Length: 416
Ligand SMILES: Cc1ncc(COP(=O)(O)O)c(C=O)c1O
Image (cartoon, protein in one colour):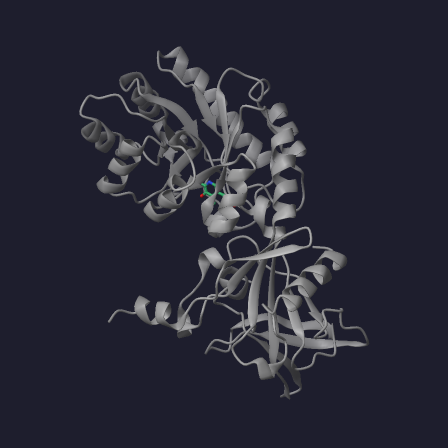
């Protein structure tokens, strides 16, 4: 987010009283997550412009499940991709089933039944799920579309933990070793009509994503040559949030699999991070500043609870951090190395180590950028601190779409 928009958003949060940098405000306004809905809209428009108009863009709920954000996506004409029963509920409360995609690696029979009864687009995660679906259907035709996720075995991207198209992956039928069984599954089950691929997230290159798409497009041809039918291709998500545009992704897919984007088969995408990450700004008061052991520490109210990935694997995930005076203006002046540390009870709860920043004061505001994806959705309960509220911003209008978690909700989580 550029400096002007960051400042505007901080000023909106201050003016509305949602962010209170003064330490005298106590609990009130200590931390907040802001989601820039204009930025979401422009990303969705770029995505739509790059793919055929009939493509279902089912945005991955796991990246950001905040209700007001999902409503905005639905208003923009997006579908939703769910990965659990509750995510399915979030989607079914907002959309007709044909605009919902359901992918998950550990589904129970009850979850499969719900998916079949509701008529969502169900992607089976492995060949073993076919038997369960057959049993649940009992010979009836499914209401929704059913596809099969395939692991094309193209290898890892930059981030091992989010690479899925690798040997031994827990996701997808193994195309390299189970192709004959996959083709047979389509021939034997005429309701199995889709192929799904998601090669990984964040660290994948456009070429790797395109290679995944090309592999299912070619497989679809082989399935049809054997007598099965494939009428939709789900290309997954995984677009890096920097290092390529959606138009470039479409170009890479077209180069690897000519004709797929304008072809007969329906298309689905499941973007998450690339829609949301840059729209999110996490803001915290600087609650404490101390100089100890030769290090300068700024302690804020968000740490490994909101930034699980960045704190535990800083080599893979990092966030830009800026510091602002209590009126929102960026702090200026000579820079020195600072550690920006979170509120949790372990030393490793640190967002930045030795980051060059202007002098930081208690009651300043720390802004953590690119915080819109896989942050609040991965919220950690450690130390039982409240999940921050979420402010949605459109132009110069700000609306609180999720309140800070109440103490009673946290206490309730731990049981009576
Ligand atoms: C099946 C599936 N689809 C889509 C996504 C979204 O990926 P990204 O946020 O990288 O676009 C994920 C992420 O884990 C996924 O597992």
